[in-house]
Image 1 (spheres, one colour):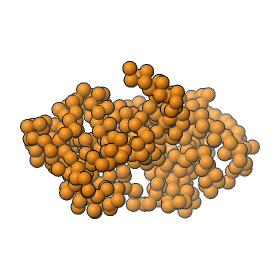
Image 2 (cartoon, helix red, strand yellow; image 1 turned 180 degrees about the vertical axis):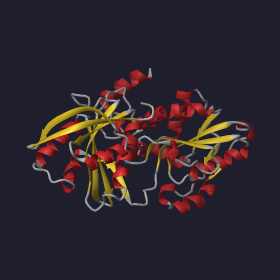
Image 3 (cartoon, rainbow, N blue to C red; image 1 turned 60 degrees about the vertical axis):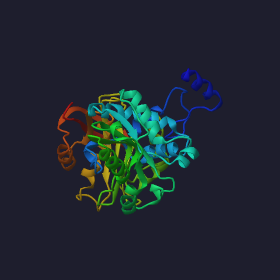
Image 4 (tube, rainbow, N blue to C red; image 1 turned 135 degrees about the horizontal axis):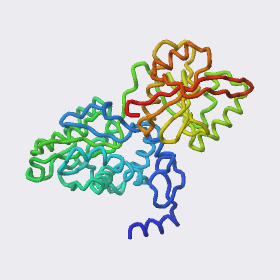
Length: 375
């Protein structure tokens, strides 16, 4: 019945992707492009909040994942809650939990928004895992401060005073509980709620969040995918013979989902780039398996300072998170320095020789393959 209702509702209020606002099919949750581009989270990057034995997250809190959370908090993005729960489900099945609950929301706030987004995520997680839910374990004080208005230090100070237990200890005694929230920032909220559950007699608490914020590296550098609207930034890194043609070609490939361009920034200044193609007419790329990495450039003055290593490793890591197990690069004949650099990243297997022209110049190069440890 709910699918029929969704189909009819789509006629009057067309379904949209919560991450990019594009129109999507009535039975989709997130568009295909955003599914590919959501920044998956690696568990080894996370320290569990105090009181939790482990922490699980789906995405890094950046880019389109952040937009998905915004739509969820604004009361118009339930799709993102459902999709995120389905990404989280395989990650928590090994936890062998007895119960799922969530970080509570005040009654006033829940009435304003129409739902508690953490509860939506937890309900769908229960559906996907078969673990029962109980949302009458904890409550939030009605006049407590809003967490996003507080600094990290203030969150740690006030979080223990915001929540309180409302259930009898036998409801949780001896149980392993999945504690769900939308965003894991400092971990103070999750820690405060976990402490209450442990105090009631729970044997263990695992924190589960859709997104996790990460501290920027001390270098002050940030690496992210750019959009077609930002392509002119690349002219700061390379002197293109025809910048407009470069922008047209890359825009076409990016919009077709065939190309991602990663740029490293120091502040607002671009200092490096690396292109990743997932489709090609030859052995360079194969969607979902092999990615072709090219246009690997670091601005003069930043070379030899770890920027290139950081850029290459992060891009490969993100592509591995999306299922890619093989990577290729092209290295021009006679460029021994580049060859040595690529060997350091594991590109050691020569699989083909190529010749191509770009903006009037011809290039002869070897195509080198790197396989991941599971490839």
